[in-house]
Length: 116
Image (spheres, rainbow, N blue to C red):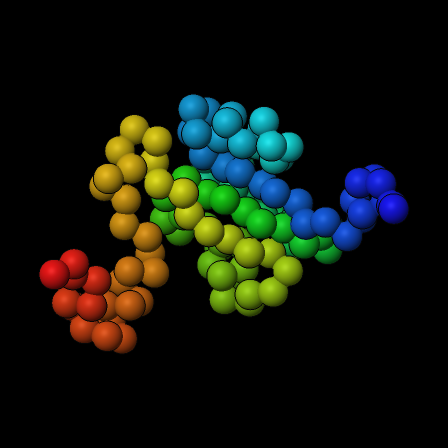
């Protein structure tokens, strides 16, 4: 049976960017954490991931997911080896509305997400 180390080259990187309170919890599961990251840090990390050729799952606190980053837009449009998803903000998870909600409402109508 191969050891975990034998599988390491095939694993995707887990990268988390967001407030320290949210991001640091992911360090416990071995994530690459960029606590209190801003738009410049986001661009730097995404550019590095793109150039490295590594597969990655990138978790962004929702505020970072909406900063208008050119690298973020590029990767969202490309799809593929770098998957980007949002995390709700730690202090107010009930206020979280993922960006995909807008797409769903545009395609299916304004009442598509209503919980009746």
